[in-house]
Length: 223
Image (tube, rainbow, N blue to C red; front, side):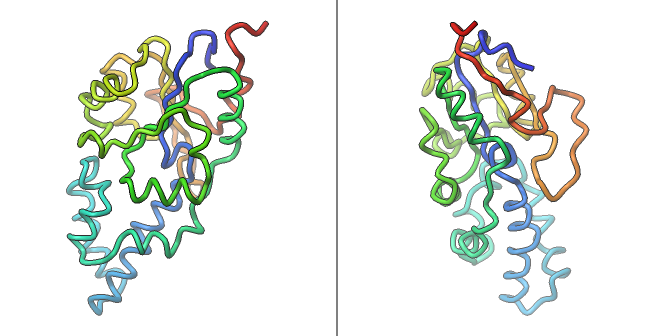
């Protein structure tokens, strides 16, 4: 799928790519509405009818990913609520094997996520994935989400990379579109970001089922 002799840098998304999106989907679609309903004396469906339009209204913006924003907006401690269900945080199959192989092949590994710093810390603490990366980039440090093509300029200034020698793996088609517009050459989507949901039929980009699809990964000097 990938000619590894052409790749120097690997940019990897976190939620839905390395980690099972089931945690985030359950959190926003079930856990937050449940706690909101309890707080306001509503039934669950009534809470969802209030919350879901508010979520959709800012989806894909920096505030959508911001723990502090939703804490203020909903009057609930979102960081604490995430901790209540952090047992659902899970690494997708074959991810760790891939990261180890990429390290061994001298590829530069960079985690590039829209997740808020508080969510990022919780997930790194739970999964221990941080040790595998040369750099971890949080879009909140730039104030621009990955869906915005200007994000990649900010990333380039912080973490210089050759567009033609860089692979981005991300479950968001909007993010992949912005990266393509910027000129990143090697782009891969993910067929099944959430293990509890059906695989997506991704036609716009090449896509992987699991990171085993990208193995073996070799050093450029390997024969």
